[in-house]
Every structure is written in C-alpha cells, then in structure tokens.
Image 1 (cartoon, rainbow, N blue to C red):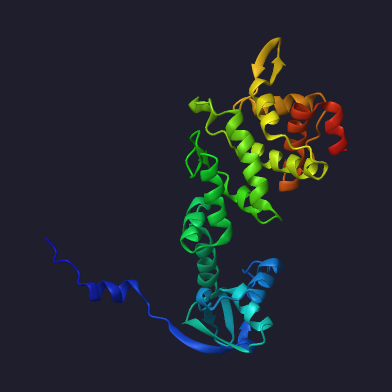
Image 2 (image 1 turned 90 degrees about the vertical axis):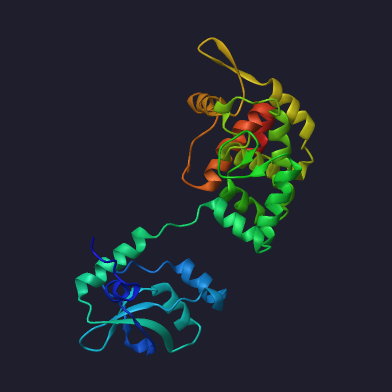
Length: 292
C-alpha cells in the first residue's frame, strides 16, 4: 500500500499561494470575457458600502503589466466611485488569457447561492427587521417560515420580503395571511402543499392595498366567502382551495375576465391574482372599480 501523502505535499500541489497587494486602479482593465456591469448592483454597493463584505478582487497580471479582472468587477467599480484610486487585490502571475476566461466561467457556475430560507434564517440571527417581522407575522397566523411545502409552511419568502419593504408591509402581510389561513384551516390534503402559496399571497396583498383606502376590508367576511366558494368545470362543481386555485384563474383568463399581461413581473402577477380574488370576494361589478 502506498504511503499517504503528507498535508504539506498535498498543499504544494493543490494550493498556489497568491500575492495580495495594493494595485492602482489605473492599471486594472476589463477583459472581453467579463459580463457587463449591472448598474443597480454597483450603485447599491457604492451607496451602502459594508467593509465586512469586502473581498479582494481576483486579478491576473499580463506581460505588459496591466491587470485583467477575473473576479470582482463590481467591487472595483464601486471602489472607484467612492473616490479611491487603489485597491488590495489577489494577483495571479503567469496566467494565460484562456485560463483567465475559464476561471471566470467556473467562478460563476460553481458557486451555489443560498436559498431564500437560508438567507432568512441568517438574517433573523442578525436581527434584520424584515426577517424578524416575517417570523412574527408567520407565527401570529399559525405558520412557520420554511422551505418545505407543508400546509403550515410559509415558503414564499422572497415574495414576503418584497411585501415587507412596502409602507405598512407587516400589516398588509398579516391581513393577507389571516384570510388565507382561516379560510382553509381545515385543509390537510398534502397535495395542497400549503395554504399560502405565492400567487395567493401576492394577489391578496394587491387586493388589500386597493380596497383599504375605501375601508372595504372585511377579513372574516372574506374568510367565509373563500370557505364556500366554488366554480364549475365541465359541469362539475369544484371547491376553491389552494390546489384548485390555478384552475379557477385559468377559467377567468379563458372567459376574458382577467388578462395575463406582464406575468414575468411581480406587479403583473399581483394584478392577475388580485383581480381573480376580487371577482370571487367582491363580485364582478365591484372588482371592476378597483381593477380597470
């Protein structure tokens, strides 16, 4: 049996120690393999700079002395906009252009981002306002923030975060979850996944925002209507539940009562799902006063 390699021997082969040095931004250039700048990302980094998040950019020194950006283009641009003319960076020497490009591709395909639930969990521990509010609102409505799909899970974390950024976002989400959880508190069919899927939460919040100025929110009345609501499918009566909701919306689209425009955007989904809920809870005529 071959003798095991020592940690030191393995390290010599597996880890090329880079140099970390302060480089002039005037020497840093953007190679052709780099993506275009995402302006909103650069602006956010520039305006909300957090020193704890700084990671030295990864650069490659060319034969002419100039430095290609392999990783950290947005960081470098933010630093430039904050008035600096130099940056600490990891500099690799003797790397050919094709290896640079391959490294850039690998860095952006091998990274595994955090799931929304994992982001939420860490931000709760950090005491971030939106994350703490989400936990509190979920618990008030008998739910648990989670990534699995079960009837008591609140899994549409990204959508909830968007809602909580609104003025009075916690109250909006609280009201929406109250209606949805009470309407289907007897739903235990595993096929329903959860009573608070994203389309229903998005639509309910959109509807609440529209009717709230008129004082027309009737939480318990809406609960009662959702409990008994049904629709026809090929002559059969189908009860409205989280599971049948997509079929109900599809029927409204087919009848021309709602228009699936701009579905790629959160606002488009909110209008579509909100109007479907308005027709169900307020009736066609009153729904039309809020959804032109």
